[in-house]
Length: 235
Image (cartoon, rainbow, N blue to C red; front, side, top):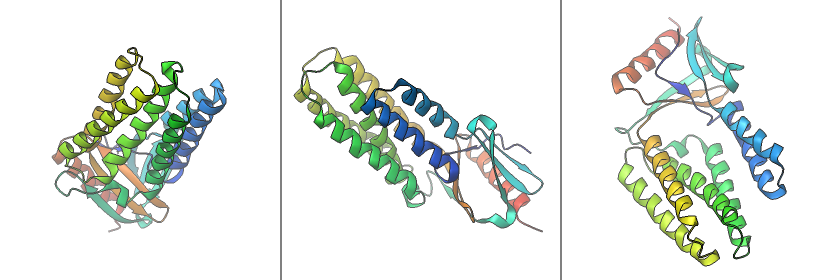
């Protein structure tokens, strides 16, 4: 039985390891200018995302790596199921420290790289570092501020961009950076809003923690949770 309304995330287990490797390759490509590392990194990012979830023979099967990797969780493997949504105002970082440390590492590296760059280089150098700052800070904002506090998250994101624009002006006065700044701002705000409007199902298992996400209506999400609990729990 396929769970149509939920999708596995890469916040834990092997998918998290794949995501970390992808970020290492992308950061390495920025330092070493190896295109193969850049391409491989992005392929691995997409591979780390979950494809589908289904229940089969009292086993929850999470599909990753374009459907090639199956993580099987039997009923006895699952210790607890938690739901984080706009009503409970849960905090993702409380349950997934590994992904938080990963994005914090990316943010620290991006800040270091940005301030280490000399002035008046081509705009792409600065926008590349700023893109990493936007990506990592947007994820950290979404994970540390309780779900449902959308206005606060968007406000903090806007403040970060204002500071980022000030930093860019110290490096280069190029007006051609404006379209890139607008694009980064739009991407960051969309990421924060999108992550805050989803429901999250945290699976605490003997094999680690896994995360399922859903943007479906609340009643469909609750039905999916009941299906998981009803099939996986032994009679």
